[in-house]
Each structure stands twice: as C-alpha cells, then as structure tokens.
View 1 (cartoon, rainbow, N blue to C red):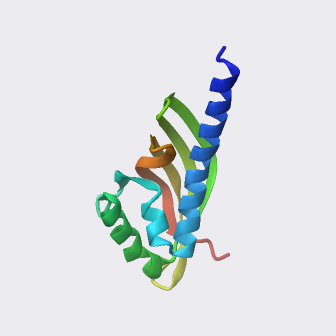
View 2: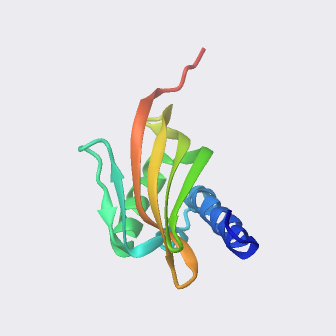
View 3: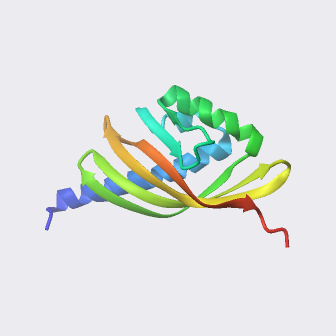
Length: 144
C-alpha cells in the first residue's frame, strides 16, 4: 500500500484531471477560445472518428478548430462517467462519456459518444495531451 503522501497526491491529481473535461465543456459553452486551447499541452491534439470532420494539433490550430464550429452549430456538451487511470506521476489516461446538443440546419441535433484522453502534467498543471472523440450516435433530436 502506498504511503499517505502518495495517496494524497493521487487524490489531488485525480481531482485536477476530473476538472479538465468540466472546464472543456465550460469553455465551449462560454466561447472561451483561449481557455479552451490552454486546456491542452502546447502540442496537444484533438481527433474525431469521422474523417470528414477536421481535427487539430497545437494550441493555435485547436483555437481555430473550435472557433469554426461554435457559432455555426452552438454545441452544448455534457460530460458523464469519467474514468481515470494514473499511469505515472506526470501522465494519465481517461475516458468520459458525452452528450452534445447542437443546431444543424436550423434543427436540434444530438451526438452521443465518448472521449479517450491522454493527460500530461506540465509545470505542475494537468493538461490534455490528446483527446479523441468516438461517436456512438448522431442525428436529429426526437421531436415527439
């Protein structure tokens, strides 16, 4: 069993990592492009399981990517069930599930899926190293 100091650091790290997806959603809702980009490492990446949709790598490209969709589709993400595995003192992986409500062609749409994340601690602060979204379902919201 790990000593008390190690256990406390793991709790602190998990809580900081758990906060990343929450801040991610908050930045999207608030259209905070700099806040969004700064959640990632300098070389951080975001990829999507749909080859027709762009991904991005690096903070400048991440900022441009998110800016292009915020006004058009007005995404409203909701994060659920965050599972975290600490893989070292400065590295971790995680999965969290997501629902995104949005507008598309003037109609309400919904996407469900999950993020597979890699996290890195940089200068004492946890960041996304990579974020990959896998879509489970995507389509118009049921209007009945």
